[in-house]
Image 1: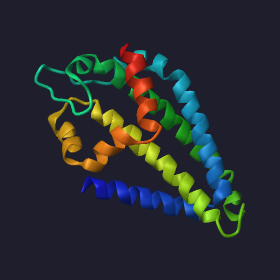
Image 2 (image 1 turned 120 degrees about the vertical axis):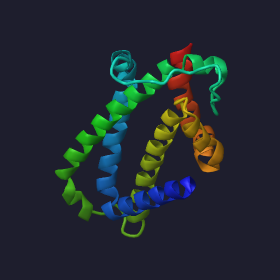
Image 3 (image 1 turned 90 degrees about the vertical axis):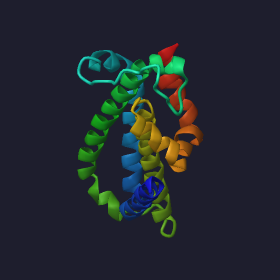
Image 4 (image 1 turned 45 degrees about the horizontal axis):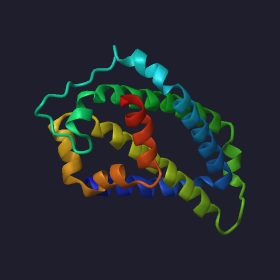
Length: 182
């Protein structure tokens, strides 16, 4: 069921991107990429500040995490705050890009190529949405609740997205887990 929801979100993203047209979608994707780099550069500073405001459930000896060892789980709160800080900065960047996109609405009626424009914009939107889904699932995987962990045990799609996404899995494991916990 969860895999079906993810598939529907990706299909809708492709459709919305295809309707936007490549020039407008390129502007959005460029803005999201810029917001991504801003988040990457600043998330560790914000992570130290949000610990007081955002709760994290403590990990017990009985906690069984799907993606993390028991040793990693005991320090996972630091990685969780880093990931949440990253997402907060990225969300603020997304809001700014959406606001600026209002002024670029006329790009919707321009075309880069007549026959493949919808495909280019649809794929850009699909990749952007996939990245957001990946990041949200990765943050969820750090929460030591049995119901959340069972979501990953029972959903092969969610587990595969977190473990086997090309480029994304290794990159986010490095910046959110390896760099923070070591």
